[in-house]
Length: 503
Length: 123
Image (tube, rainbow over the protein chains, first blue to last red):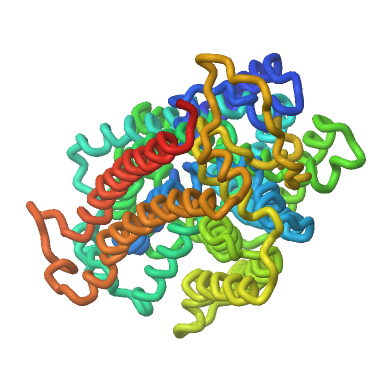
């Protein structure tokens, strides 16, 4: 059997596994609540692995190694930022968000701000961010299938969209939780095993490897133009963006209470840290063993090309297959979480009036996945990790200030939050749109357009604060603060808000 | 959604022995009296101070690295056992700091909440 056939088989196996666990979950999922939040019958260890499995996307599995290989040490900020983002989420948001009993970010906006318009804007932003994040996942799948088999990219993108839809429509969150817990360990093993082989081989490296590895621009930090601005903008986007990702927030509802939300997050940080040690090593090995790819930015498949350029025969075929399986686990797990969150928002806010709970959820998931697939096939390719970072920038410019001020500052008003999210959302989306259109500009202006967060996040915060100070705060904000901050064991009045679709 | 508060209900039976009883402080919080507000504000402030303090540590350690790389030359091209220092710091060194901050946070946040619970909660 040829290398391509084995790798394609591995990808198929992962897809089949996803569908099988999804079908198993289908027998367990009975009510609307099962579909949305797994009825919170998930253990903490499983939940932590599931959260990590969902979070580690194509950008983590393929993108980071590709960027490190092409651009060097500064790209290590991506995994560091994605991990630190979870720490900031833990410090400011995890327990209060769980205690709010909001299931989605729109639920939280409605509950805290007591405004239907804030809910509507949050829903629109949530769908926008999820779609922005979903496009690079589908795109990565297309690239992978193309690299493995030579088949056109749309086949891989469509295949992932179909498998994700089948498993989400089938079992909702419960089956997804099991699938994603399995997929964390699958992804970790898929990077570890080939790495063990690659690090123990005595292969001398591609011609010119030593020169490439010792080039100063690649080896030393902060060498590029505007690197100080770009790095700090990346730090702001990732540190604050994680809390505003719709599929991350939904996960917190599966924790039993605020305490569990915190402790699960600590475990997640451990699991992410272990995983993120590996992709940079692949980047360095790629620099050492792959001569041709470094010249361009098209390095998203470097991880998959490594075994073939170092080993020959069956060893290379099998290791490539293992990596392909891990990559597909990454596409499938993150995409399912995103499709699920799109379905949660669309299903409740747009279709819920016309269809029943589970039917609305299924129709919404289908619309979300197919629309994103169409956008993926139409949009030109950006580097996967950079495309994901744009979704982080929009999340950091909209939901992060709404959550941080909403939880910790009683003066935040509906008008303030709405105008701040509108300003941050409009500016960051404009920058993203220019980035996706493929145009590029030089100078500091170009740097700001490619990493807008350092400008747009402070503007969004400032708008929220100024407008809030000029308007009246929500009526029941004191009761809201009680619900957000008191531990569950204390018997106090928490108000009557119930999130739609949950419980 | 209704958060409005009807007139506080007064229980006239004697509380059963052994059942958790609501304390005066909990009642003050429910009534949103000045005393209740003070208790709530002290809880929120202590949690916010803790989170901001640890965020500050994160910014001073991990967040200061780009500036340090620019202004401290030996950090930019220094080596430890042949491995460039910047790669060590960013590739592995940041993660233990992040995890340590998380562990400290959870411990202290739970301690703050236990103190609040001892004050307000059932006993």
